[in-house]
Length: 127
Image (cartoon, rainbow, N blue to C red):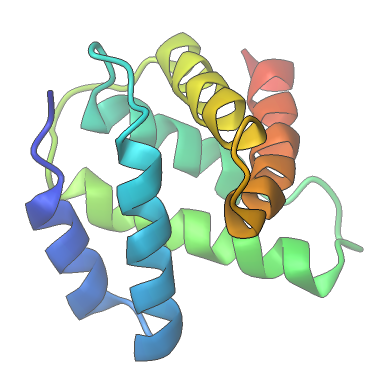
């Protein structure tokens, strides 16, 4: 199991604005509860790198914003690993997150499950 605390601290220090970052850190903490035992930081970096890439030039603002967050997370997470990521493992991790949040009764997690489902489809289309 990975110790994500240094990564979460780095997210808090390197991303802005503070209010949104605190929300992001809270969401990441919730996601990390459902990490698979074999998930690595390198796998997460790989997933976020793929998700950071625009699929078209006409993406809506919310999707472009999400891609920027994924890019920032991949850059920060890369500081904590020097291993190559495995896209298949990233897909499995996003699947575990999406499954867990989809079953949730928390409205924030239910909303996030929809984002995770879209991200999972993107990751699967590349793998």
